[in-house]
Image (cartoon, rainbow, N blue to C red; front, top):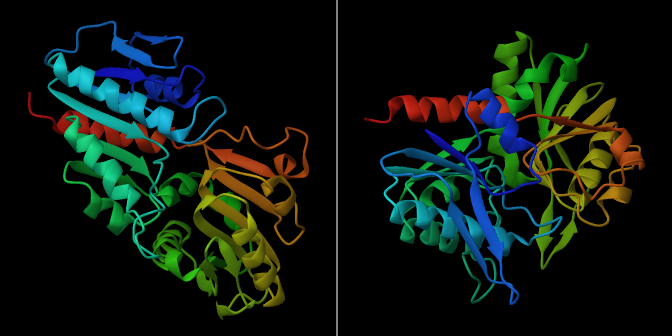
Length: 319
C-alpha cells in the first residue's frame, strides 16, 4: 500500500496513516506564478494499491475547486505511472448537496464530479456521510464506499445518551433515514429503547422555513439531533427550538461535517442547543477559538472508521 496526503496542514491524514501503520509518502507540489500547479509523487507507484487523502472543504487557504482539481490531477498522474489501483479517500465530498435538479436548468453537480473521477482513472472513492447516500451511489460508476457518521459517534454513544429518556431526531424530512439508522444502532448498542422524531422544514432559493412541527415523542427526553452537515447552523437552531417547545429536556446537535460558515458562530450559540458534536472530516477553523460555540464543541475522530474501511479494502485486493 502507498498512502499520500495532499493537504500539508491536515491532522486527519497523519493520524489515519498512523492507525494503518503506514507512512505518508512524499510528493512534490509546485505553484507557478500564474497560479497553475504541478503535483507529482516522489516514489514509484507502479503496481501498488494507492490511497490518496483529500478532504474537499473550502478553506482555510484553497477553495473546493482548487482541492478537487489537485486531487484529480494527482489521481491521473498515479495511473499514468502504473499504479495498479487508486482510491480517493475524501472525508468531505464537495458538491454532494447538489444531487438533483430543483430549478429549471439546474446542474447535477455531484454526478459531474463523479464523471471527473471516473474519466481520470480513479478506481474507488471512499467518503463519509454523503448528503444523500442513494444519489451518491447512483452518481458514480466506479466503486464507492460510503461510511456512515453514526459509526463514528457510536464510540461516544453511552456518554452522549446519558440517563433517562433518549431520542434521535432528524432536523428535516430528507434526513429521516439517516436518523432512523442511528436510532436502530443505538438501541442495539445501548440495549434500551430510543425514540425518534422529525422536524418539518422547507427550503427554497436558500431560504429555510419551518413551523415548529415535531413528529414524534420527545417530552422529557435528551434528543440527539443528527444531520449530515452544519453550515450556517440555522437548520439546527430551528429544529432545536421546535424540540424544546415539544418538551425535550436537552438537545445535542450532531453532524458529520462542521463547515460552520457565517453566521454559525452566533447561530449555534443559541441556548436551545446544549452542545455541538462533529467529526474531524473538516477542521473547525471558522469558529473563534474562544467563542461560545467552541466552548460547547466536541470533535470525534473518524480516523478509526476510515482505517477499518481502508484495511478491509486492501486486504480484499487481489494481488
